[in-house]
Image (cartoon, rainbow, N blue to C red; front, side, top):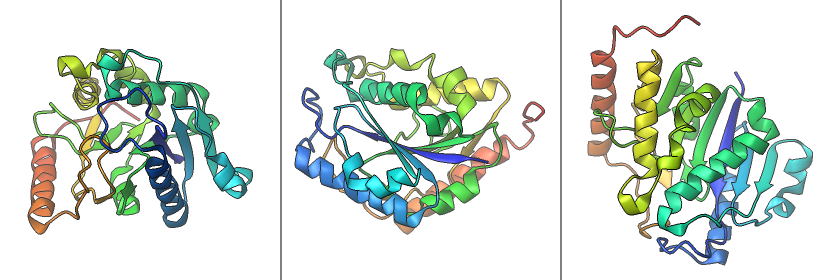
Length: 245
């Protein structure tokens, strides 16, 4: 199965006022660091999409030539800013799926917030990529809120579930990207597909752009809680059948 990483980016946030980490140079260095990490630690092709029209390809010309990275950029910060950065994130996904050559060849898309390093990304992928009817994400058991920094989806999930809902994202009204992602997962399950909740805690290295808080290594308590949540979900849904492959 073809797995492609999709890293979302906004090097120069300009009009986005909700961000604490807003300095262009600081953000650029974080994106470069994350990209180098994924190039070194994984074997997958990467699509990097920036919505502030910033070109990072000059830093990775060798990898572009080897068809390891695809860089896309567009002027995507022209939307109504009251809708919030989550809406902007959704527009990045839309641009990527419409314009990326790599994604058109993908079976699974690993979406990552581009400034962050998922330190155990390979282990998470090994456990989560099962079949084209499975979405993998960290979400609460009631499916109200799904973590958006990192998730793994088959292409069909984006087109049949998320895309038709994403334009409802409105941070001002309290409808965040994470809520729409969770609603999309509900519909995915209703259509007789599967959800895999990560049994391992997602280990993130980096800084939250919204709060400035540095992500910390998951504690033993958090790791145990994540494992129990995952096991509870899969026990509850053990008899659930997906449609025929």
